Structures are given as C-alpha cells and as structure tokens.
Image (cartoon, rainbow, N blue to C red):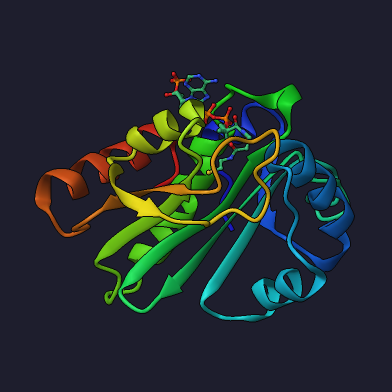
Length: 187
Ligand SMILES: CC(C)(COP(=O)(O)OP(=O)(O)OC[C@H]1O[C@@H](n2cnc3c(N)ncnc32)[C@H](O)[C@@H]1OP(=O)(O)O)[C@@H](O)C(=O)NCCC(=O)NCCS
C-alpha cells in the first residue's frame, strides 16, 4: 500500500488494520463516536473481501506494522454502492489532512472496481466537521436514515444524514477526484 506524500511528510504510514489494532481502535472510536464495533463486526471487516479497513500509524523502522494507529477508516463494496462505514482520527491529530488522505485511498480503491457507480455514507446531523470533510469530496445530503445510531445520549439525534455521490462516472466529479489524487500524491 502506497502512503500518500502528505502523510509520509508528517512521518506517518498508511497500512491495513491488523487484529492487534483492535483495542487502540475501540478506544479511539469510543472517544470519537461513543460507539464501538463488536468483536464480530471487527473480525468480519478484517476477513471479508468487500471491506477495506485502513489505519494511519507513526512510521517506524519496521514499516509501521507494530505502531498503534492514530486514525482509521473503513469502506464496504455493497454491490454498486461504495460505502464509507467508519472514519476516526485521534483528536491530537485533527486538521492535518489525515481523514482526507484515508478517504482518498478508500474511494480510489472502491473505484478500481467497475461496478461501483455510487458512493454513500451516514453522518450525524450535528457533525458539521465530518459533513464538511465529505462535502469536499462532492458528497451531498440525500436523505435521512431513521434510528441509524444505537447511542444518542450526548451525541444528538439517533437519525443519520445520508450523504451521496450519486454518479462516480460523472465527468466533472471524476476529474475533480483524479486531480485531487494527483495533487496530494495519492495517485
Ligand atoms: C471528522 C474527522 C474525521 C476529520 O478528520 P481530520 O483528519 O481532522 O480531517 P482533515 O484534516 O482531513 O480535514 C479535511 C477537511 O474536512 C473539513 N474539516 C475537518 N475538520 C473540520 C472542523 N473541525 N471544522 C471545519 N471543517 C473541518 C475541512 O473542510 C477540512 O479541510 P481544510 O482543513 O483544508 O479546511 C475528525 O474530526 C474526527 O475523527 N472526528 C470524530 C469522528 C467523526 O466524526 N467521524 C466521522 C463520522 S461520520
């Protein structure tokens, strides 16, 4: 897996999540979303070919596989829909472009499969930072998913805002995404 220039300049490496990451990612998700994946979900995401689960770690001499993640994100190829199913960055590393770099990687990897024609994700209605992140990739609000979130206390509504890129083959969107990859060194 190639680490985008933006991350390597910061001494960070992009790699696949491994089973040993589970406790660090649970702690990060609890702080970031107030929700954690069950052991079964974590194992399913690691094992299934339709899922990608990536982490950003401080670079080490051994290539980063032994370092604890400071961020992670996952995607799921659900037929023709490419879904972003989790994104979290440790709060000490916000606003350094890490989430953007992970999204670029996951979206490019889903677009490598020809059947992917649409991108979709769910986000909390009050989570403006995440909505702005996704809007930067051309996602637009397209609906509401009722009772999407199990936990609401302290996190606002249980409903999710659905955000979509409705046609990844639309030339303006595609060219904007490809330009972004070249600019950030991800392509
Ligand atoms: C949302 C989150 C993933 C963003 O991660 P990040 O690595 O800080 O984001 P990036 O640095 O890649 O930011 C990319 C763009 O997103 C938007 N953005 C991110 N954080 C923002 C903030 N706090 N306020 C406004 N815009 C923000 C900006 O447009 C930013 O581009 P810019 O810095 O050039 O203005 C991070 O804040 C986080 O982990 N939050 C808690 C978990 C979460 O909400 N996950 C998403 C669930 S759907």
